Amino acid sequence: MDKNEPTLLELAKIVRGAGTPNRSLTPYSEGLAALASGFSIISKDDHDNMVKQFYVYDALYAFCKSNDKREIVIFQILIMMSHQVKILE
Image (cartoon, rainbow, N blue to C red):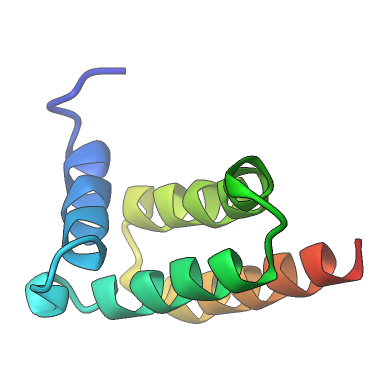
């Protein structure tokens, strides 16, 4: 992947905002930070945490790649579904 790809740059900005005190960097950074905190609570260890979060980052990448940002609702549903599936495992 090209590190200058617009999709990756948008994703990186969201992740940077979630991982720093500047959660207002993007409209989505605070939500990602909350999800990451929640996953750390329900995970056995770091490896389990990463495995559970892969689905979220895949969905976030798809959202960033989308030209229709109204799909935020779909992104939120995917996050909730991924969270519920992992809790049941």
